[in-house]
Length: 252
Image (cartoon, rainbow, N blue to C red; front, top):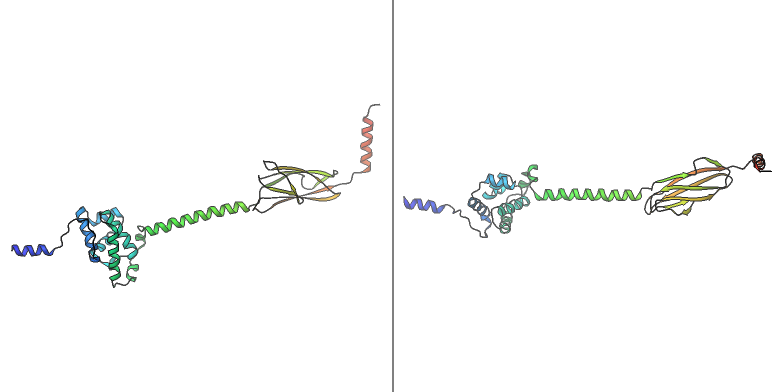
């Protein structure tokens, strides 16, 4: 009876906690199982802490390749599992890769078992998601800057008024625009003040005149405002009447 009991006991694997590097690929699952028992933790507890589905941890310990999602996810699971149990992750991951390479199970079985809920625990998902968000934000920023650069500057004209009629041959063209903006009046460059305001005299011809004011920055489109001014010829009658009034106002 005693010998039989000893034989049965010796046929069981000795699950003791040892911090050693496992050389054989077939002992990866056993090493993880052994380390978990040494930590006195259940598979359920480890799955909750690592946020890895429990069925995957059990399949890794049992080396049940058909129940696992694929090598990309398995390496991540084994690395985190080994690190949490105090084992060196790199040798176990390397051993698991060798085990996968020696396996004859078709890779299509692994892909078919991937679920959307399992992707949330993968670092690759979060890396790609963060990279996508970063690309969108950078693209939006650059697009906004480019749009602001090509937008025409704000331009307002205070003088002359639209459809203005005058007998004066000279009018003052004045207005306001943004800083660092190039302003032209009928094609001639006009200097602006620091606040973007400008005022320049302009000589007109008799009859209809078009005053064209343009403003543009370095890379922007051009803002254009046109004013039509009509210069009328003074009436001789009105001139004589004005002269008589002036003469009548002079003292004798």
